[in-house]
Length: 201
Image (tube, rainbow, N blue to C red):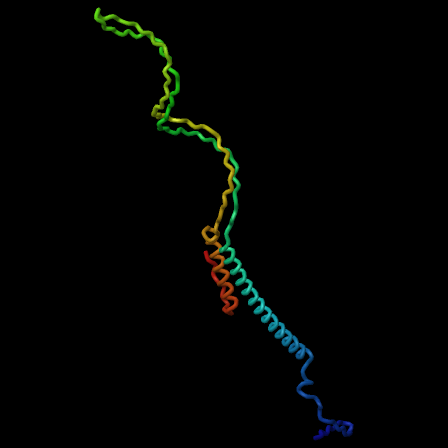
């Protein structure tokens, strides 16, 4: 449809209808704002996805750390201590025993023996000299009761093996608490529950 406009100089001008659409009527800053919003939405989606991946990776790292702590708790310390030292020794030992004492000797005899001699005429004393050697070979039992003092220096050289299980020590209890805490962190991060585990006091 054409519109006819009348002007004062009595001339007729024919104008065509406008070809502008609703899209061409929008200003440039309107489209720029939409572009910034779409870029911001894409960045936010990428950032959220990155944070979720990082969260899952931290959970896996916490689980791996918990397994490492468990293996450390089951470990033990084996060590050999070399001892080389001189030790003074002073003691008194009571002694009660029986000792066999042998006697082996030659006993000389040099004497004179008076022997009465009876005859028909009467009794006469007869002196008989004796000079000889008598062998003596005997063994006798002698009881001995005494105390024997002992004073000496003893050299001690030995290797002492030492075995310490970490589970039975205070360090093992502390590692158990750390392992429990890491397992809670891993479960919380991998399950998607947004809550922070409370550390074990």
